[in-house]
Length: 82
Image 1 (cartoon, rainbow, N blue to C red):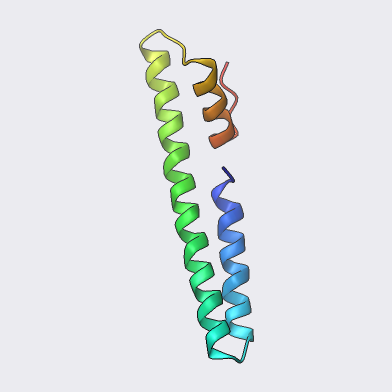
Image 2 (cartoon, rainbow, N blue to C red):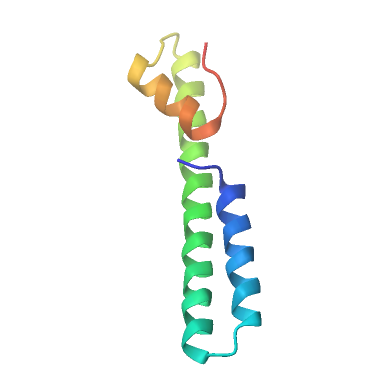
């Protein structure tokens, strides 16, 4: 999953386009697109926080996550799990 910043940048770009277009239908489309990207950014943040919490809990319990879960955590958070 992408980082939240990427989705927020895309949302900002869509809002900018919405302000520039003259056709009301296109404006609504760009505003809807921006709202969707904002929702994706929130989901990305939530998933990244969950993955980091899962890794921390595993370490505290003295165990390691499975390889598949470690890969998921690294992909979700850009944080290397050792």
